[in-house]
Length: 163
Image 1 (tube, helix red, strand yellow):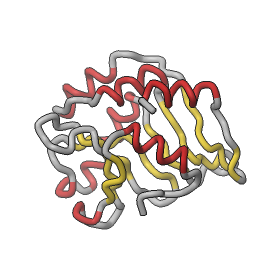
Image 2: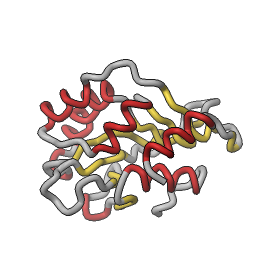
Image 3: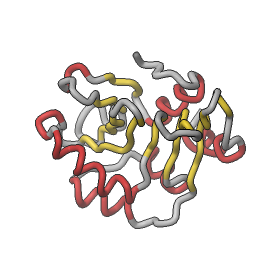
């Protein structure tokens, strides 16, 4: 299933309940200029999948604890990436490589979603999970693309399927 088909599915089926959690939720976009600003600010090239996501949904939440907000994975809006990427990168600058873009977080355990945005590298468009205290070599390579990550989250509700 392509990213456009996944996004259409998520728009038609915006919520599935898993215990007290909202399985996923989409917030519609409201600004369109941010992707270009992100590329300029962080010297990256955004994969087309991320651009497609941001045209449809500025923020996406998977397995989000709607009752208490204590767990779930959030893919940030372009506006959030502009602020949060640099904040988190500054905490552990030695762990992030050129072309890394932090695009989301796991609530409750401080894992971060890192998208590889260097078109000259063999892993362009792949997704890493940055662990809060572990070195980069221990991070999970959870998906070859955002499409694969989202499909994995849909197919494995409430689980970090890559662990």
